[in-house]
Amino acid sequence: MTQTYLPSTALVVVDMQHDFADPDGSLYVRGGEQLLDGVNAEIAAAQAAGATVVYTQDWHPESTPHFAKDGGLWPVHCVIGSHGAALLDGLDVVGEVVRKGDGPEDGYSGFTVLHLPTGTNRGTKLSTILDENGVMSVVVVGLAGDWCVKETAIDGVKLGYDVTVPLELTRFVELQPGDGDRAVEAMRESGVTLV
Ligand code: VGL
Ligand code: ZN
Image 1 (cartoon, rainbow, N blue to C red):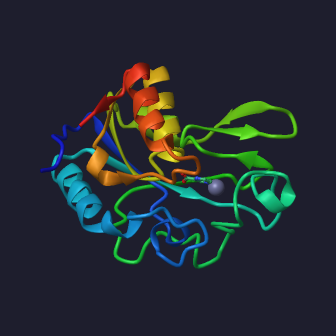
Image 2: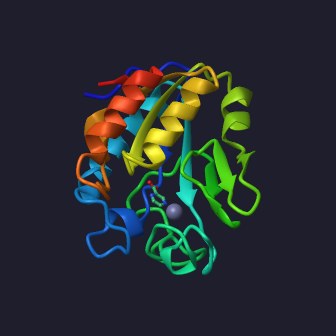
């Protein structure tokens, strides 16, 4: 069952990239490869209703304080132009792609990135795209549920959108056991609708 879409709805497809969704990807999110058909069905439903479909793409330089080797948290992933950074083969791409994280920054939310040298948040073009299309409500799907999906959904609420996350269309990194449950709780407390 897909969500109900209106012309004022946006489907935001988060980071459906090889490094996250392929079992041999460098930051594989367990079960990520199971999402493709369901996400494509969601894209088709959104498109049929005249809703906006937007994609985010994690997009990092070879060295960035986002990576553990440069002082951050993560194995090297989604390096600009690499196979791992490409959107999944078979993902139906019918809308704009918002790339994030190409500076010295953490880019968990599709709406904002945190510039690490200065500690300041910078906006991406996502909210501009949504507003140009008269979007009021947003459905967020993709990877990973405890990082980019969570931050995108919570930022969406803060920006005034009515945000829904269908839990069967995300998977969790679980860097620490319980991160998935905590992410769901944080989204719920922020006013995200979980279905
Ligand atoms: C993500 C960790 C690092 C994500 C991106 O897409 O959830 N997670 N970079
Ligand atoms: Zn990243």
